[in-house]
Amino acid sequence: MTTSHSHDGDGSPDDVDTEYEEWSRRLDELDARAEAAMESGDDKAIGVSYVDLAEHLAGAAENGVVIELLLTAREAFLTHDPESAANCAAGIGYLAQSIGDYETAFGAFDTASEEWESLGELRLMADADSNVGAMATRLGEYETADTYLRSAIMYYIDHGLLDDAQQSMVNLANNLLLAGDPKEAETILTDLLAGFRPDSEEYAKCLASLASIYATSSRIEEARRNLDSASAIFESLGRSDDAQDTQMTLSHVLLTAGQYSRAIDIATRSREYYAQQDRHDKTAVCDYNLANYYTITGDYSAADVAFSRAFEGLRAAGQHHHIANLQWNRTKRLLMEAAVNARERAQLSKDAFDTAVSSLVALEHQRFQFTQARDRVKWSETLADRLATTFAMAEQLGRRDLVADLIETGINAGVYHGGSSDPSSFQHDLIPMDSDPPQFAVEDTPAAITHGSVSILLSDSLPMSPPPTLVSGSTGEPILKHQRELAASLDPKLDQVLAGVPSVPLW
Image 1 (tube, one colour):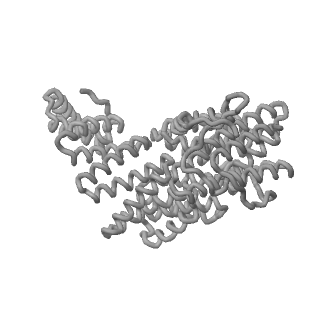
Image 2 (cartoon, one colour):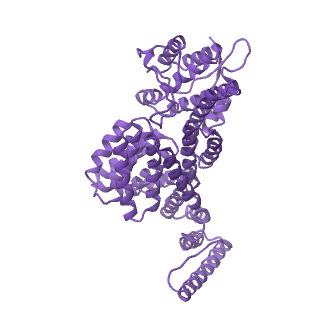
Image 3 (tube, helix red, strand yellow):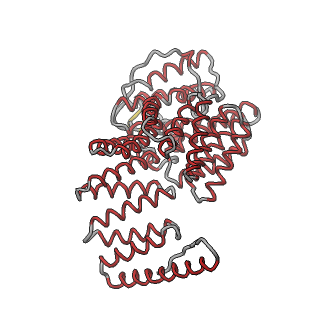
């Protein structure tokens, strides 16, 4: 068995050579032992030798190589040593998390949780649950994350493990923020600050998370102060990756303050940093932000490059739930160019509408991950401005048939009654993560149509499962077929959902 690796040492050249020779000799020894164990077919020997080899290569070989070794060890342990098998699953989770492979990490931690529970190791199960929750947040499975994180927190509190409980509560707050509940997230983080040492990693993470909340609510100076403090703490602790993460957030804060050039410069440097670290998941986040920044500054060619990079990067990282938001931001880019490019306006407007509807379909279906009606309503409410904008776009394109299709699709989803919002108050925020995006103007008549449609679709009468596909009685084609196909291409999970729901005729 051969394994590619690199090894760095400290000290004089002679010391380095001696250290490397010893490390290589040990590698050859462990490699030979693993081969012999595999040839013998002895599961215990295979498991132990492959774990030893994995531990020796950790930090020297690529993490993917170490994960494969642990998978082999785990398979061998399953027949006679379930505790070691669970340990391997947890180790795979940590390694996968460190390289941004959140799907593998989620599955590994979830497996470890189940196996620790069956062994009666409830403390280890709680640790695994906390990690499952953190990975679920990364994958956009917000209700799953909430369930696992609260389970871990309850165990920690019941057993007096307050430090562990507080760390999991930071993750819970971040999950609540992404799930559309920034107020509860802010309350939790503010309360936690009082319990952490001001020079601790946990304190810095609370500050950084609060900064994200402040940035989305136009509290720019508060956000900047938090980020400066968090960055200083991370640097003092030698946590360069966390410090770099604060720079990514800072770039957005600077953008909202109108400091476009500096925001782009920081985001570009962050991208270079993560590309050098082979953190493709975080490189994709930088591209996501750069696409927004270039859009706002009117550099559409650069924005298109960043959009494409972000799309591929997020898909490779398994973070398909972010792609729907990315496509909504692309809608803004298309509309902004349409406003200044008369020659291409018609095509740009059509592309913008198709992109908007596909994004909206994908985002709207994400509400079905929530089992509580209150949470589904809360999620849908975050899409109010987007839904209003999409109706207005269809109307201004002169496509009243598409307006009707959108209304029929919403009613078919099980939503029947309206609300009481003032139609004149609708503002169409095409990039929710920005505090001051361009607004899409709506004439009075389309605004009234839009208001009624949005009130219907955002009522609290939401179904428990995705609605069937609505089919035109005259053509036999699904309503909004093209846009639904585009939406399905954004997320393999949504593709399965849309392919599996029944079809019903238009009524």
